[in-house]
Structure formats: C-alpha cells, structure tokens
Amino acid sequence: MDDLDHGSRNKRGDWQPTAHLEVAPLWSWPIRPARLLGWLAGYVWPWNAFFLATTVLWCLLVLPPAEVRQQLAVGWIAQLLAANWLGVFLFYGAFELRLYVLRTQGQRFKYNGRFPADQPSDVFWFKSQNLDNFLRSLFVSVPIGTAIEAGLLWQQAQSGHDLSWSTQPGLLAVLILIAPLIHEVHFFVIHRAIHWGPLYRWVHAVHHNSINPTPWSSLSMHPVESFAYFGVAFWSLLMPESSWLPVFFFHMAAFGAIVGHIGFDRLELPGGAAPRTTSYAHYLHHKHFDVNYCDNGTFALDLWTGSWHDGSPEGARLMQERYERKRARMNPSA
Ligand SMILES: [Zn+2]
Ligand SMILES: [Zn+2]
Image (cartoon, rainbow, N blue to C red; front, top):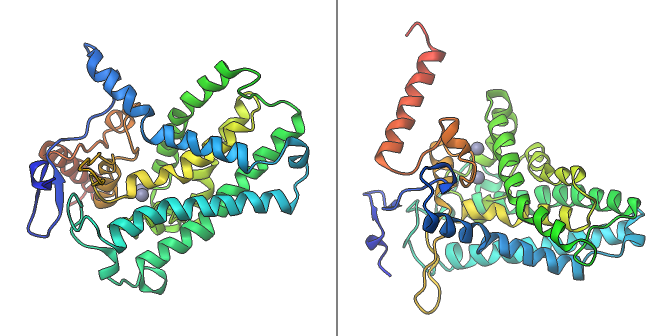
C-alpha cells in the first residue's frame, strides 16, 4: 500500500493523513445512522474488545480467589505484578520491535519522519528516549497501577460481594460498556490539570519529553501522573463491587495507553491489510502540546473546550489563534 495515496509527506519526512479527525457523530444533527453505526463498531473493535479479552484472561488465569485476596499478602500481589509486567512487555514490545527496531514499515505512514533511536538527547535517562521510556513505563507506571489495582481487589474481597458473569451478567456488561467513557473523561480531566503551569513543570513534562513518541512512551510518566492516570480504577468504588472492574480499568489504562503513541497511522499486516491505529489525535498533542487532551472524541470534550485539532489547515489556524490570544493574555502590555 502506498502511503501517499492516503496522505502527504513534507520535506522533513513527516507524513500526515489526508483524512481529518472527527469527533463521535453523537453530537451532530441530524443523526446519520450509518456514521453512528460505524462509530459504535469502532468504539468496541478492536481496542476495547482487546482490553476486555485480556481482562478475561487475567480474571481466569491470574487473579486468585477472594479468600486469598482478603489478605494483603506478597504472593498474589507479586503474581499480579509479574503478569502485568509480562503483558505490557510483550504487547508494547511487539509494536516497538516491529516498527522501531526492525523498522518493517520504514517510514511508511509514520507521522514523524525520524526515529528517536537516531537522536540521543540529554532530557532522557542515559540520553536515550527508548531506554528512558522503557524503564519509566515498566518500573514506575506498571507497579503504581498494579498497587492501585491490588488495593481495589483487596477491598472488594473484604465485602464478600462479586458482581460476575454468573450473578448479574447484564449489569456487568453495561458497566464494562460505559467504563471506556469514564476512562475518557477521567483522562481528559487529569490531563487538563497537569497541563497547568506548575504541575506541568513538576509532573507532566516528563511525558512530554517524548515529542516523537513510540510505544514505550505510552506510560513514560512522573510517578504522580502514573498515580492520577491509573487512579481511573478508583471509579470502581462507586460501582457495584466486582473483581472484574478494577482489572478492566487497569487494562484500559495500561494497554490502552499505547493507542496514542504508536506513531504510525496504519499498521501494514501480512496479506496487504493496513488498518488505521487511531493514533493521530494524541500524536498532534505531543507535537503541538495544547490540543487534543482526549485521545478520542466520544464526548467531544476538546471541541467543547476549544482545544480540538482535527489535523486540517483549519484546525491549525484555530490553534494558532488560541496561541495568540493566550500570548496576549499573558503579556497584556505587549
Ligand atoms: Zn499532555
Ligand atoms: Zn502521550
């Protein structure tokens, strides 16, 4: 597949898609059923279906019974941490190996024409974005996320209640269907908060060091951001108690973080298929900093708050106008 049939490449080698980003068609009138159905299919497939599948695996193979989880013991928590490490290592590693180490696609469909491994920088540990991002993702974020997950699983085990597929499958299915919406709003709110000047410099700058993100950038965070980000699982405390919900929230946060950091618009698969990655909105966030605080636009939160950039020249113009208004506010005498 020729990437120039789907986009254009500038002199720096950066590729951008012809198609512009769109928020969910829930907010435009009249409702167009075909678009709505297409969006609904994309809501489920492939990413949320994948996170649910890994949740099923973990609940069946990794989680011990509630009697064991009633004690905050090293054994089962270490087992959960080991499984989470292995899952993230294999999942992120597969994308990183294929796209950034073996470079099987070369620069085809790659937003930023350069590869971080070719550009050592002092802002990263050991001057290596890859090593810095790898260490932070695995040894800062995954343990913090696992600690929250384990704490919630321990708390749920104390209660003796466990909403499961055998007790109330309908209610559990509804909660799992709305959990990605909670994740989206939670991420938007904490993400806006850590872009506030002092918090940005103290916390979020670590993540934004990766202007040209790769899969290992996904969870490369300051510990405070890791806690706030994986803290989405605390929303399960407001829901009927279920061992499934803390695990699903962890999996959406841990595995789901990769979606915005793949750095390629399409994945070329054996057989000629090249599905889109839906990475572009968050790539634009890393590139332009003050746009697209949400990865995707179910609630159109960026559109409503004026930070939406759809990748079009019009989106770039609106972003520039916002920058100029902000500069005028900060320097009223200029
Ligand atoms: Zn940010
Ligand atoms: Zn990011």
